[in-house]
Image (cartoon, rainbow, N blue to C red):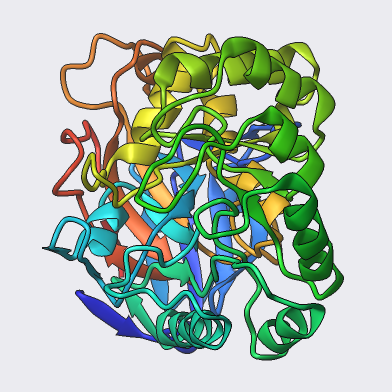
Length: 397
């Protein structure tokens, strides 16, 4: 399943039975009292106990075999280029490999590794539109890659942001990777972007690629972008007092990434929790990057947040699902009626010392992925990347 062209079309009625643990993706109620999900044409229609639901005449029935069902994981920070190839690592099939890590949706923080990336205003707009169109039409492995995130440059006007929005662009690449690095200049462009429904992310911390700069708390606060991109650095983090200040004084999204400073990421998590604002925390990988491609990066972040951040595993999973979906205004990420039928089936890895799936994650072990579905269609079975799960679901018919 290397590439899926666009949406899969009508998938018919789907019934998932015998779910041992229903993980909703919602912080306010991360575990649901349910063992069955029904979806029609890629949309969830009902959740509950099988005996109470209309499960007749299903086109596809999945026997979960007692495994856990969670929303498909969302990687809030990636740098795609063309299809399923990254020149940064000269690697093919990195998106599909992430599918095997439970990721069903990715959000571009800029196509910054594009060879000869244009930095003139006409060129950067053209690249953003091409990327948006390309990934909307061809989905590697079925993964939903929300791409087309231009890196803003000096000289852009409000009309440029209107042009981008009218062309279907909904994201900005990391502010600070281009020539716009001053807080006041960034704030004006963030305001224009917000006016036209374009969400913004700002680079935080030390430089990551040639041309990027050091972005400190003062710039982040003044720019007021929607997402504090990799608050734990990409790779080099700000000082502890600056990270704490951003969590306390900025009320935007707090993004923690795999490619950043892990200790700094845990500090951001603990600060957000102490503020009673855990809903602001979202997870990404910031890959592909110099540290490589991380197909299991989001699962590793979940395990890190739970095992060393002392966060219950069911809540840690919410950081990579419902939190991101709500902040990014996506139609997936939660197991609730009306949402996209994007699911990952999880179970305790074989020989984990944890007694249950959630216990094993709390101890720092990665779960095994037994199946991944996107829009109600099976995209992969037992993962080739995770440790083998104790139990795996089966397609009954």
